Length: 555
Image 1 (cartoon, helix red, strand yellow):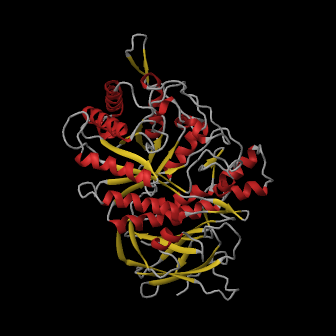
Image 2: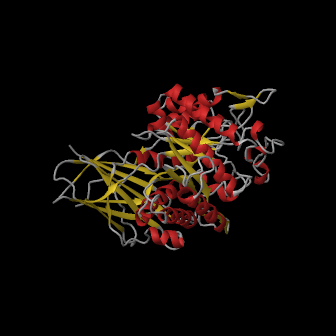
Image 3: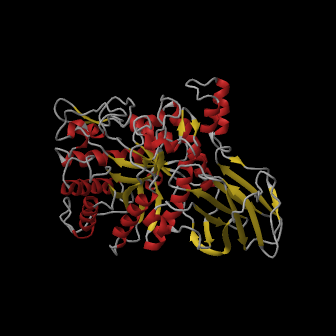
């Protein structure tokens, strides 16, 4: 039966286009829908406790029923705590005139306090190198800005330590301090990891020096708290040959290598990390995404982990999982990043996260989280095309996809295959032919949810797509539908800002309007659904790069 949706949601069959038929079977359980989306990260740790940073963290913490994990760089970098693009510092470690270590946890604690106060959990990234320990301490701080050479950032903080024993003691003292301040149970729920992307210039040492540093770091973490969770190596782009070689060398060492600290075979590891990014570009004046590139890197990372029988079941955290690689590169200097303000980012996010579940299942690995490397950039122009979740305290459309994920029940159910794309086709060919109109669905005892997207790699105008969602396995009782939508008209602060004339300095009233527009909106008033013999059909039109969440509930 058709649901009695109001005119805003009912499919207007004014064209001859046949609806995309999506069949959801609530009786076919596909296992847990893990909250892999509830993980976020960013380069600039000092934004954490600034005005818009605290506001956005509050928003992020509220979108999930379970704790959100946050990963930030530069937690051990020397400096005054001033925030800047691609930079942060805490001054956690310095040395006195005699070379004696001086520990100062004030700024690190301020960052972690901001998380903990909101019920969030840190992925405590152990890095980068304090100036007093760096083998090349000068020059140390960069002053990079968009448009500069990205390689300018890799200075003294990226080098190995001149004293591994002092490094080990620093790590030990940090973990011990954290247990004393936050309690053992709390710190046991964190993830401790070493460094970031050591297969590229973030690490100026060799592969073997990273492995040595990992041994010293893991030993220190476990001495301070034997039950702490320790992991790595956070390599980026496992599909790249050099990255693949680095990743395998690290994994081989974990299993069979001689430990630099103990002299024994093997090194402790509790979870495994790597990064995967897409590759947008400009084509004929429009942005063309490349989801396939990102999914191929994810698949290759899963393949590497699955090839080690003793490590295959460990949790995997994709430490950065994004449409491309530079959050701080605005569209002013990188026009291919123009996707970030509008609905292309939100539809890409919906479609790509759904395929991460499929890829993990196909490889038989344990995907725990996929970190969206996007936050906010304090005191920057409005909607400048940074990869962020909010601008000047106003939420962007992409954040509403995560709100949708947060509303989905925790048991995944079957969406019938046979649609234009499955995870294999997207992985191998991206979305370059017809649109990817598909769904992710889940249930619990009293509700079900279906996230439907209309995604294409090419950001060009297209007619709205008629969609028909047929649900099987509903209870034969009163069912209520809430239909949430992200498109140009709904849950979209960017379109409202443009209609205002793209003000550089919005008034107080305009800011309030933008804040409201940034929240997740319903397409129409909640409606009862007619269920016959456990089935119902929901018909609606979905704009290109739009996302709908159909949330059904019953007593």
